[in-house]
Image 1: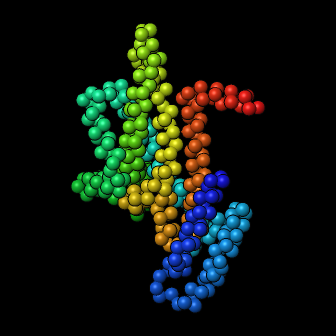
Image 2: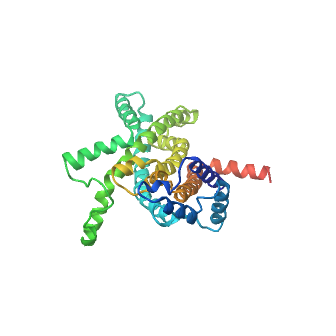
Image 3: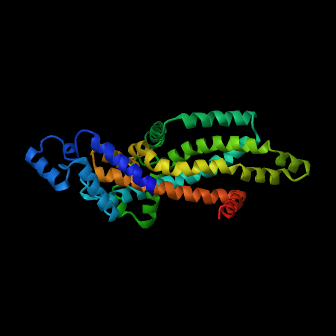
Length: 316
């Protein structure tokens, strides 16, 4: 929580130091008298220090401020956008974890074969491709050349008038391409880590001893895969929070009102409260993801839990 607060303070100071304010972002055509009145109403005519103290006092009361761009509480803006982002990020990361780990494990077992070289080349190209470019390619293929999927948005304009089963189908069709972009890019990263980790574990003495003892290859490889999960799970803990704010270009390409797009729009509109709220919520998500990954790491390797218990006893 302290890290999230420090990051939000840094974001608050940086955006305050930039020229202009949310009233300036209203554009031309607004009389100067109206601008001055709005600055007085929102407190933008005060010094940065005074504005920071007011913001901090409100934050301690659970008040994240008011969005000048959307005219509603900043926390409501961020939570709505967070929910929209999780709808595509969670399935995307889950699919990436499934296919990335399985594919990387297969590559580690069949390292330096022709199949491994082909898959590695494809994954390297996919990993290097910007998400926005991949999104445009999918749009071109499945919305223009073969118009089988909607080009953007969360639902069709007539969604409210559809039958329940068609509403579900409509939501799923809008989810396919954004989720696929996230899954493909993240799977490429996970597969590269899983492949290298699997190769390192297969070279360990306990694996050679297991083979020498005559244990079935399937059992040995399964245990080797479990032992190779630790660095991959650490990467997984980074992917979830990074995707929440990092898929802004994907959200732009598919007109998806997620957290990344809300953060980007808030910066452009100089919406101070929403920018700070986005950073704080992102910090909380990072903390939760880190805790969840630590539990997964302990489940994958119980020795971590034993080491922690020994450390606590030694420093008790």
